Amino acid sequence: MPLVRIDIMEGRPPEMIRELHERVAALVAEVLDTPIERVRTYITQFPPQAWGIGGVPADVSRAAEVEARRAAAAARDEAAQP
Image (cartoon, rainbow, N blue to C red; front, side):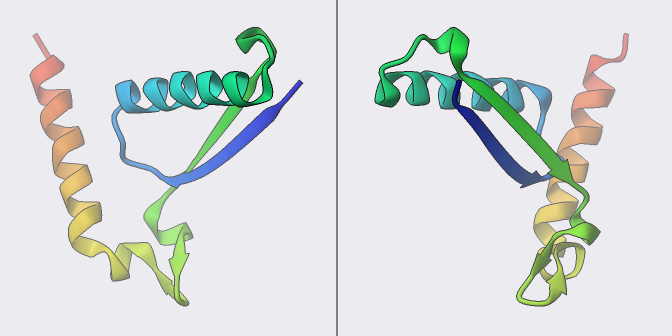
């Protein structure tokens, strides 16, 4: 039973995370010639301040990217409200 673990910075929409699970599992099943039902995926999302890049927290080194993800998430949440 293959297990693929992916660590990413949080802030991506749930649809993107679902697609990542689906596509990674399909690729692993194909490459390893195993049924997709045997493939496990585990995605861990970390807050930007817990993710370091070159010794600098991502909320500092990638402030613009982090803010853009926050704004996009807020817009999605707002659009989803009745």
